[in-house]
Length: 483
Image 1: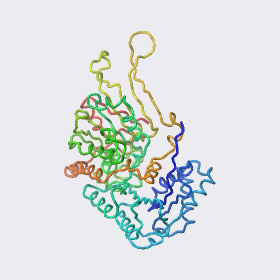
Image 2: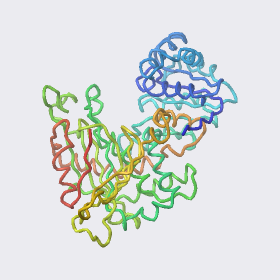
Image 3: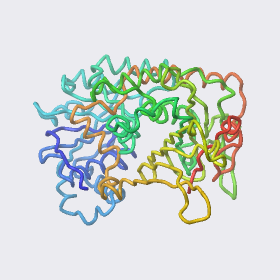
Image 4: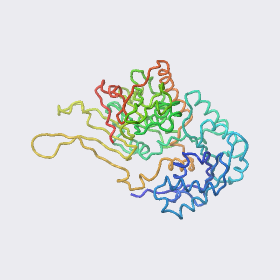
């Protein structure tokens, strides 16, 4: 199956922080791929903006180097690369001052979609938004994209939202979470709401529990000082895992419109019950075989910041009463993998005693490394000699089922094109961000008050032993983090 490419309208996209790591690794390579498959129109333009003093030629040379490094087979696409680079220009801009803003104004075309990607530290969001407004850049049809972190707690999130809303309407603000751009995450909505098979079973009557795992094999080397100010709760749970939980637990929206979808996500967050400290496990990876520990990488031998979190979360509504959601994320674990596992209850009357309590049916939604969906079922083993049962999986890997393009598109590509289309469905709304922080803040405050050190765990493991007991004590087991 070949995916359809629907071109977007002509646009001017300004990338603030265009010389930074995110722009070089994700934003510009994503735009180049959209260009090569024909989704970017011929008269689309990309304008880089940053503090560095360089001209268009130097910027294009910098982008060429990045594309050759981060885009597979870019060196075989010489003609496409040259044409894409010709659409790039650069303006040296002082985010907090006045330098370069008039030059940026002159680069923008009237009556063309304007999008502004703020690939900069959140401390600059307010200054850039104010300067855009002061220089008449922010038209009513402009869109502004902001990266996480969306605040450090509820108070800072509210302050950040207030800064943005002073200069833009909520309908113009696109708070990006790249997890929502993954094909599998979007397929979760299609799986639930486009098929009559699953929705009758999608409740506590039939689902025993849900596991959401985002595991990373790397540590915090190179970014330890930054990470130590956030930790796994702020860096992953409050945003990425929260989004996966919302899409799994939400009610069917009345229609597929941005606000209808986001209304249902907010309802999930507001229905989350307070989490008891006894239902949370925090961890911190040790050093081993000459590799540094978390504290070595953070540069703080006394750090109490967690590199691992596991918790039991309850959604207090009719659909999910009695069905816990187990969230787990960490650094330096056995493998890099992200998945949602929906584990169904046993049949109400089990005629096979050996299967009692095994919960043999599970729907596994894999986000990485190989996006796809697996349904685990129980069948009879072939052959004579009695009723021997085995668990097998019905597996659909998107790259195999839908063709190579299913895995070629990066999440950022989809989301940037949605910005140009003006579709906010896969972006977070301000009240959603604030609701997530309102839930997370008491958990973090509880840790800070008790002052307990996170449990230590070995690199290459599944996390602390206490995380296993979080489920074992209720007769459940985590799915293995498979290499």
